Image (cartoon, rainbow, N blue to C red):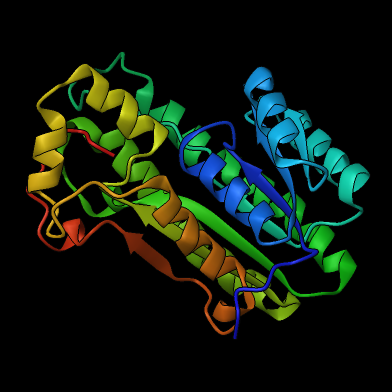
Length: 258
């Protein structure tokens, strides 16, 4: 069965750069109508202009409940429906496990778990009303399984997103909505690119910790999201697909690098 999403209406959050942008581009290339959502309005406008008439943009802070409602309204206004949601917006920050005044834990739990849950709820409600098959793909991380001290906030938030994915998969299955996740590791996401830029030795460390021996491209993660959103994965739900070059099998990293 081909990964045919032609004509489908798709929301991709975090779509102004990195893996989110790669996903949006790939979905448009495969015939989908894609609404790119992010806070960077200028970058969104540039990308939508390049992608053509099958793309639209929505700029806003999805951490605000009202913005989620506006996102849904913008999607329906642009494409009349929503068939696929890709939650690709992530926040990666270091955490100090001993600092009581460090609010990064709460920040990442809200951004990576709570916000994604709200968007899933809003999209699922619309999908159910449409009475057709729907698919949701969350962008998670292999950090959910790691215990690197400075990544404690991001690791717990990623673990929460993984469990959210599984729980929603069960809750939404009776309504023909599948929910899966792509867990990134050793992929050149926007966050990893920023981290590597600040630590010249980190790139080599990530490569050494990855059995395949290189850092993955954003396009490779996008292919996994396309698979999970497409009819190819029609009997797959509640699964966390690691795209990490084997790093999670034997992770030697001792620094935050996701």
